[in-house]
Figure 1 (cartoon, rainbow, N blue to C red):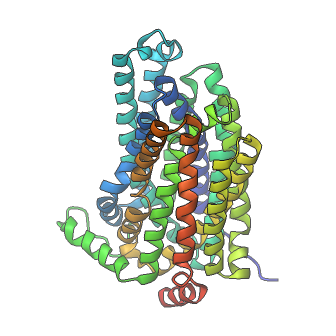
Figure 2 (figure 1 turned 120 degrees about the vertical axis):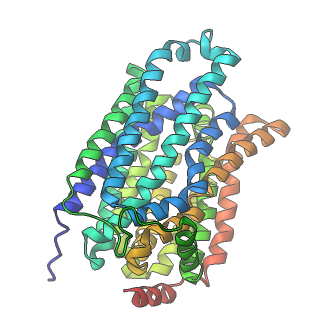
Figure 3 (figure 1 turned 180 degrees about the vertical axis):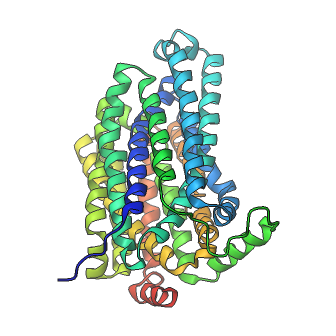
Length: 435
């Protein structure tokens, strides 16, 4: 029996920081859309919150990659956690001050001026939060190869995502729903506290985490030249280029389906805040299953077949979600979809961490995420538009179901597209060449 390599104290500090901050994210995952639905019932206005959160992935991802390759990645992550703490604390204070208006439709939130002002606060905070998230998440992924052995990346990533999913989807959302019932501002204060704790844990990592060959502080280098280098490296790698484009389309479709999800839950499934939180717990169940067995599935059937399976499962679950009015069945579909998402991520992220040179890891990751995550705000906007258009020519229930059906169809098309392009032989060839 082969003894497993220990992951090390620094890894577990990163793991703990991610667990704590994702606990807060899970609470926020219920609190923010519920806050938006208290301000407006317009699907396009609600979708714009998702657009604001994800827009930085489209406009700021490439510069973020350059920054990640130039500075100490540990300090960058901690700084972004502090920034997110500040933003969330400000939102919590805002909600505390205006909570009476939000809960009383005859008060400020019930007037057009009140709704506009409150939405501007929500859009502005979501945009600022998104910029911080771009820097934080890009730096965090580049940190992992410095903490564990290359052979342990799938295992380390799997454990990290499993714990994140538990907090983000199983523990956080139900608690968020309960806290909203207690006081509208409490979940936002709790979320702010988790970012502060995460920053402290990240700063406790031993050592410095600058990229190999990173310029010394004060050295003048062109952002444009550095960005072009990262873009060229990814674009000339046919496997990663295909993965980035495919993931961009998948993420756009997922965001299209989820941008008005809170309205689907309230009007089709007829759930209240606490039950909404329980519904979101499905992500944790599927995520934990995926984190435990993803590497085994990859080894058993091959990474290529695993990616095909992830796409096929996602297509099927989206179609069923759009057809049903059963909260139990929707919960089950989200379990399967979350498993598929983690299976895809464990394989593709570990591959990137293995084959991209450390000096380019931040920039190439940022280019990859430009395609993969930059499509999210477009998907969110499309989701709100689809609901509005279908409702204008049909009925409200059909409109709220339509994004799921469209997303399922696009996923099915992607499955056919990737069959000859993301097979196991190509993935293993790229891994061997980059190791």
